[in-house]
Length: 123
Image (cartoon, rainbow, N blue to C red):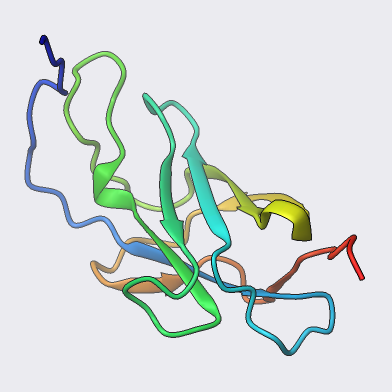
């Protein structure tokens, strides 16, 4: 079996980006929701699950796992990079929004001050 990994890890201080995610009622945490973050100019997105490693109703993604497509090494972000966040809740639906990453401070930051409300197409 052959496995390919990125070229290497460099020391970066990127933040964990957290997003609150609720069901249609705006109160019930949407547990099990997948948060997908795609940073402009990066190799691939990073993901996190609502309630995993962070309190409900939040999901978090580790921006230290953002890699440069040219060098193959993880990128130091400074803030102001464009990021597309998709909250995918399966049968609950999904919500996508684009924003600018806040200035990097080396810890957890809120992605969007307003929490995401999934459309909840099902009764």
